[in-house]
Length: 165
Image 1 (spheres, rainbow, N blue to C red):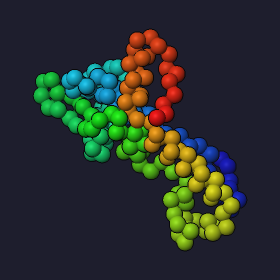
Image 2: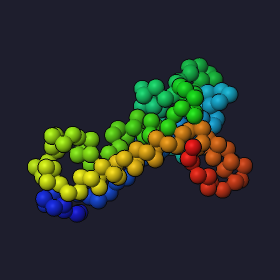
Image 3: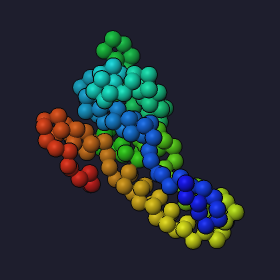
């Protein structure tokens, strides 16, 4: 545990949970395999090695966020609710993880405080820059790029593509 200048503990970890990581894999799978027909939950589960129960929870969040649609019936499953080129990694991660800010104070105005030391916090600009970099990165990568990458990997090509527009 790391303590900050004011003695508060901070774990020092900024990691995405399995919700974000598995959910992104699932929606990329839908972008690849759900183009011509809905991607079945069982097939996504098998391809991505995610339990059906957990996958259904993730897909429910993605559906609630308007990123995927469910199709009922024997040939049912999931499809993207919009175009892959319009859905960013940031959209997906925020739907699954919520706010991606590393610390609470990066979203506040100068008059709002999250802790007793925020008025004198010299590291707030660091957290703000990290937050801005994270947002810029995840908002610049789109599902169509990741789907193209996944198709290339399926054809035996290494996953090395730089995902920038």
